Amino acid sequence: MSDIPYKIYLDESEMPKAWYNLRADMKNKPAPLLNPGTHQPMKAEELAPVFCDELIKQELDNDTPYFEIPQEIREFYKMYRPSPLVRAYCLEQKLGTPAHIYYKFEGNNTSGSHKLNSAIAQAYYAKKQGLKGVTTETGAGQWGTALSMACSYFDLDCKVYMVKVSYEQKPFRREVMRTYGASVTPSPSMETEVGKRILAAHPGTTGSLGCAISEAVEVATSTPGYRYVLGSVLNQVLLHQSVIGLETKTALDKYGVKPDVIIGCAGGGSNLGGLIAPFMGQKLRGEADYRIVAVEPASCPSFTRGKFAYDFCDTGMVCPLAKMYTLGSNFIPAPNHAGGLRYHGMSSILSQLYHDGYMEATSVPQTKVFEAAEQFARVEGILPAPESAHAIRVAIDEALKCKETGEAKNIVFGLTGTGYFDMVAYEKFHDGLMDDYIPTDAELEASFATLPKVD
Image (cartoon, rainbow, N blue to C red; front, side):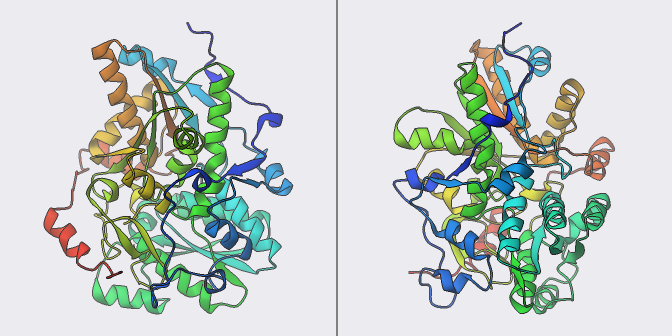
């Protein structure tokens, strides 16, 4: 038995006091957000009707390496942070691998996922600005749950537009949001003009994050005292989520462990970007090298099959244009159980890093993902969220490669949250009703054809 404990806990004094801005160390900065009408870089005053003022500053900052975490947010973090870094001894033994497997567990809070790290920050800045409430979208429901909890804490109104397929598949997640006081609407809906347009163009659609974003933005910009907040993709969100990676690195450094492979699930990029932030910073500065792997669902493969281009952030085409790996804002994924990994694009930060060769990506079909989730649950005692299970799948595959080669690599992955509200998905897997739909090249080409023409 190693002298490294099953769970590595930090004490409160070791919690990060500042968020790390990965962009400060990037030689090639992420391309700027563009005004959808003029195709010129968005200015702060143009973003002001949509986002909170302080969050706009964080969104546009490419140069400040660290942002101090306000004391009130740090006090809130203490309810569930620092989160444990777990050595997966039981999984290692079951696999018979010489690899050392670690996972950062972000599901030990009431919302059930890492999303609370940014939700509490965004709610704090909204309250500080004197706003009445916020609007947002949610896929599997983790972000909506986290934001409703944060808004409840600060007495803010919270309007959530939930992707229709998840609204129907995850009724308990919906009810948790309502318990915290949020209103939850299946998207696309007939409550907004953009929702009506989407339904007219795609009758019977099960929705997408792009649809839900369009509705949430419309409501925010047309309702006095409200702003829109987003749970992934944006630079500010990756900034807040850097607490994950900062704590992970501190815990590993305590025991002199250097990761060989760092693995994260990738939908919009919040968890992956947060987990890899300090490690990628070292890589960019030439201080250390790591193999970093993004794992996405084969049904929504923006990294592995997408185009690196400017695209709308939403299906309704009302949001700014972002340069990212995208499947096209018109792309609506199959109604699978990847949940929060159903966004058509990827964070501009991560897209630029991937384009520049600093990280790699792979996609996996959902039945293989759930096989890994079940295997993990049976030996590690945690039922993982379907999103997290994408990282588990590849971590297990990497550990089995080590079994073949005899290499004792250090594998680190992010366990973003728990799957106790995802039992419909587990039920379909156990009943053999889960399929592995993968979009065809023709379907993707049709979506790529809708990409905006940007000089």
